[in-house]
Amino acid sequence: MKGNVSKMMKYLLSRRQLGLLLGASGMALFGFSVCANDRLFPDVLAVKIRAVSDDTFDFDVTVSSTYDRPSRYADGFRVVTQQGALLGARKLWHDHQGEQPFTRDLHGVKVPKNLRVVVVQARDQVNGYGGKAIVAALPGR
Image 1: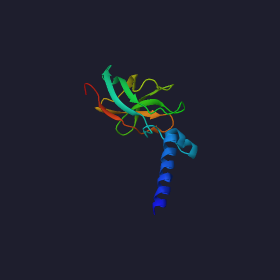
Image 2: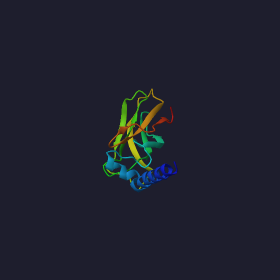
Image 3: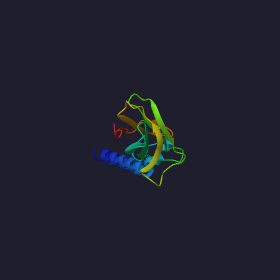
Image 4: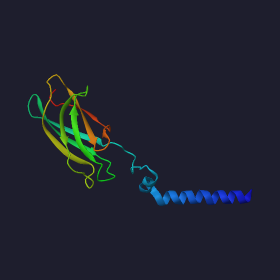
């Protein structure tokens, strides 16, 4: 029995050491990868809205993006109705690896006068939309 326990401890130790050596980046050797924080999508953290006219608004959108490789980053955000109709979108042309979270603007979004709120979503270059979105009230409505 004592010999079996000793063998088991050596086995467990070797597996633990292997796990520590590989870490998240080493997992790709086995056909899958793990993000540092397991987030697939960027999150919208904050939205500031300014009314330009009765039906036009400017948006400042703060996004937090998982950046785990140059081919994957938050590449845009959009403003939609609660039913999902697109009102405006901004394409982001490069990563923001050194600037997390980051804020970008979107000007001149036309919003039908009957709407009081909009939804702001961020997009990941690989996984699309799906992170934390914000339902934002339109000022003056």
